[in-house]
Length: 421
Ligand code: PMP
Image 1: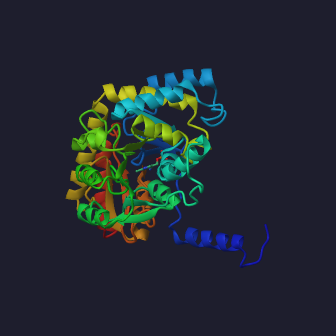
Image 2: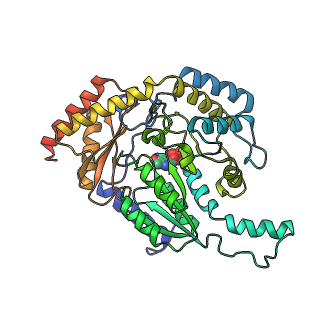
Image 3: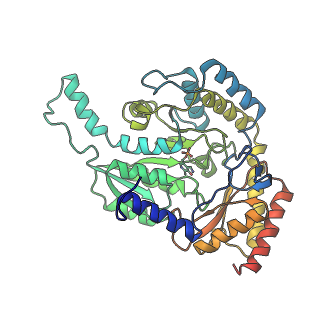
């Protein structure tokens, strides 16, 4: 559409061109095969993939696919609406009960994506006082004559500085007072909690940090939550299915009881090979979210075939611990070897292994050169990470073989020389 040079559309187009010409625009390849396998088909040839979140190889598992196919036949492609309208389907409920049991909570609520879970649940919690006045008014036993206009008055959210974008957005949507605390800095969190005058507090932290691959100090955070009577929510998108003796996630990794955390959030997109998100906790809290989380009420749930397939994937993840053990072994090996070749891995402890490049353009160049060598590994850069902290974010899965990792290491060693990294 035509417009003046200063119209919003013209300014958007010119900015896009600027980024595209800078070499920083993410030119992700079009893949002509399953992107959940370690070898994918791009530009008419095989490439090694080191950024898939199909950590346990369950996306393409024959039993998972058979279960999903059966459900596809029975329920069709979509859900036909939101859970509160047409689509309160048995497979959704079965998945909620299964994931709650897996992570050791009473119940769970599912969403079409992990992102939807975070942006729905965090603001929903803070509507409790507003909904209470509404309920009292409508139930006719209240002296409340004015329903609160500010849903979230009285709440303060203590949010980890490196929390995932979906947590950041959920916190912003809540419109509560926000106190960001520095990465894994328990002292600063304690100080902020101590200074807070707010009657209602929520602490929210990722379990495993998505850009650094390190693990939150959950025992110390849980102690502070108890001490300050704060709610505690852990986003364990990267921990669930992967960490702990039984794969229950970051809490199990640290020996923290699930009862020490109010809400455990996670996604079905990573270890469980599907798509969708959940939040697990006490039954009444989950029931409250069903009447307050807007992304649950006003959006369709994950497709029934996916819900059934993911439920099967959880069963397999539970009975086949070798999958997470091999993914973590691969990560351990890669981390040790890449560090010995002079790269910094930013405190990574799990299957996400970033290698710091620093400069944004140099990181883009590394991704480009790796692709020439038949390796797909995108870089993460500002604003996903701090300026000057660009990195290649490698993800190790149980499907990677040692020779594939060695080939990657060889390419990285060579590039360190040629690019002067
Ligand atoms: N939380 C964290 C920590 C994540 O890394 C992600 C996805 N990268 C999400 C939430 C969102 O999950 P989903 O992809 O299911 O929307």
